[in-house]
Length: 290
Image 1 (cartoon, rainbow, N blue to C red):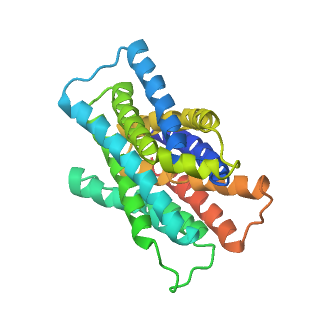
Image 2 (image 1 turned 90 degrees about the horizontal axis):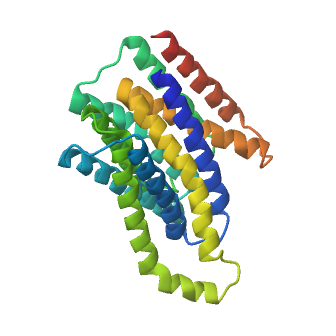
């Protein structure tokens, strides 16, 4: 069952990635967009807390939720910084190292181990993702921004670990997500307000920027996929191995890749075809190991 939840997280996070890719081509206030993404997550999570009578049982539950909110805020910030100063293909490769960090820290923190077949499946999936991300030419002369890609991978790994920790504490899902999205919304709102004066000056010199209402509304729409993905992945962490769940959910890049080829009419390279095939073989190996 955890594989189903992990695959659902893959689909939702893949849809989120597609919308992120689309909006990245527009002139928008990124902090305001992400404020909308997190704000709708906060509203839905708060409603879920009331409907399902979820609650916080102590400061540990609240702290984990706040840590998730900070981790999400940091991960997006590092990733955006990396793309702004470095080569996108390199930043993608480095930020895609999240599953390896999760596997390492899950072993150190909780002594989680894998069977030989599960370990093989994990590295097959990761190998497929790495081949896909490495499909673009990368030169050793173009490593600028590498540190931001690594920091993004660590921040996303931190999020996965905190999601797992919330299940170990037996924290109620929607209560945890309310803390996460609430704190994330606050951080992005503050960032937006701090930089609002500068953005207004830029918008005054160009009519190409989206209005605040349009940007925030778009963020609300993207946020629906984000909160659905978080519910799915926390459900997967509750009953599955941390490293394997992280590896499978990381396959959302396959959905984004299919979108870029089918909708954007870009062709597959040989390496990307090999990567797609390899990743799916990895999923089959994992499925057969249970």
